Length: 452
Image (tube, rainbow, N blue to C red; front, side, top):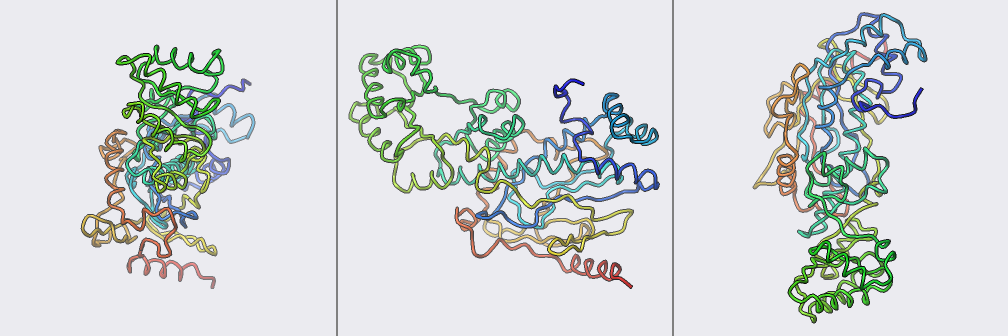
């Protein structure tokens, strides 16, 4: 068998854990295929976070619309895993026929709130768990980290360029997308630009400078080919590199159109101040300073607090791998089957029973508190869960362009109270209440599940 990845890797039913298929076969053997409701949520906030940003829905809906089972898939399941012919025949015709409700991408979310709700025959809904978790988990982490970086940058441009350190090609693409979703200016990853229409940015690598006989010659050649480029000045000595850019400006005169210089090592804050002074004295006030080198929201905030004259930041590794909070306690759990509420009572992992809705209150344009209630309850506040797919087909609410989602995400960020935007974890978490109706439902189902 070829080791090459299939072209439809992320549309294959095999992107699932083995036990999902095993349970699917058992459900069908027991003639259990009534409507189920699964909800995806996270139990607690990662350390250092005051909010997360929902993301990943677009990929989930694309998967559900196009999910198929190939003959090659069926042959593998038959020969290697020994699934029955009757189960494989049912799988052969698999299509997602259910409904999906979700909190829109770009919305701030909090523990205990369903981000995605899948309503479908249990055989269908069960098989989706792995993919839904995979995409929403990663992209929510990435969007949340990027949102903090952008807040720390305080209006200065942020460019994502962490692909080379991301945990795989899919992760690199999704980090680029989610960074742009929450307000980054663009990415260095060309494929992300092609797929998502994200603006592309690029400077140069140290290798280009090293390949030339001297730094000044390298600058001159690159600026000749790309007049409005950004020149990397720290290959040998940063301030000498800046001086060579100034010399190039004098040589070219009015033809000099270099946009920026890039600082990528050393004491970035101190070097930025020295660089700005040198450029200004030379009459090159229009040349901006672009900073990179192991940046994250904390380092960017420190640089800005020190009044470093930096115009834009390139953020790579620490964003791409979500270094300080690489996972969320996220789960996809059954809450209703055949019209009856279901729950989990494991210690510290209680799942409230039944379909839910999230009601969000606002005051003076800022959000002030959420309530998680039963789906049919009528409570005060904006309804966060929206119907995005009906009978396996996207609805307008689930067919939002990245540009529209970006505008929405930026607007949602403005609705956060200042204390939530702090890079320090608040002693008082954002209030998420459980409605009286949902509490009564929990007590009722708990009584039914008690032994004896």
